[in-house]
Length: 316
Ligand SMILES: Nc1ncnc2c1ncn2[C@@H]1O[C@H](COP(=O)(O)OP(=O)(O)OP(=O)(O)O)[C@@H](O)[C@H]1O
Ligand SMILES: [Mg+2]
Image (cartoon, rainbow, N blue to C red):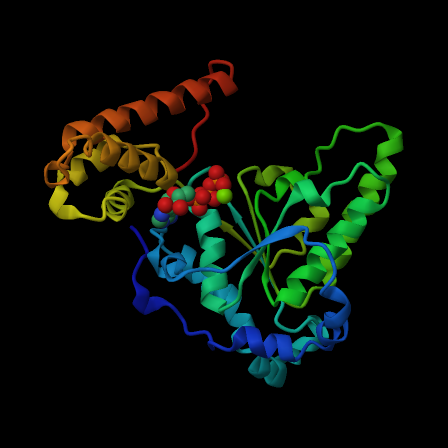
């Protein structure tokens, strides 16, 4: 069952970000000197279309995200009743990990978190962070956290396994520097006073030290049939120009993700918009079905190749 009703969303104060920022003296002190610092990421300003409510998610997933953010909303009450600062001195801190197969909406949900908090998203760029010069990577990791704080942003580690993987094949000379980078990252995560979202489809690769720092691990599974129908409808925004039985297409799209459905709809829209007269543009069931078959064939070929003939499936 999808869980896309807006009614069940808890309310966060619109000024949560500003309040967290205001309470953070470290940020104010560093502000002047930080204007000149280089960026090691991209600042993304979420738009209304990124709203969490627009995602088609399995039951409970949206609520888990909101429960994580709620800790920031009710910080004062948590302090009053539980003296929460003794357990977690960092105010407004929340580390979320979204994991699951490709195309299930993890990156979109991170934008949704930022939209919900009224904050921008600081998406760390690993190619700028990872340096071949000894010591520079650790410096860049620190800088990423400082930049996120400076911008009052949610820190976003997309495909975090590439930065946080325990499976690093290395020789002795690299080991010290990798450990130094890992320690720096853990220290920065411990100190950070904001929201961190990390995503991965290789959850098993995460470092153990990281696992315990994450407050919530939230699984994004492949959509079921009724969610696939909603995803088809979502990505075909003009129903008057769609002549297809979405329910039966959804049945035939078993194993496909939201990202696959986006591509199916885009391809069908382009194929159905070839006539010079836009009044004749139409997405038919035939066009959609052809794209569904193509997507499934490509996926099967790919998973067959990865498993050396063995099929690897993700749970829907
Ligand atoms: N649950 C969903 N609800 C609505 N749209 C979705 C959902 N999942 C995927 N999509 C569509 O697919 C696009 C790609 O999704 P997204 O990039 O968030 O997937 P992802 O889980 O981050 O994939 P990857 O692991 O490959 O990075 C979205 O922009 C959206 O159009
Ligand atoms: Mg992603």
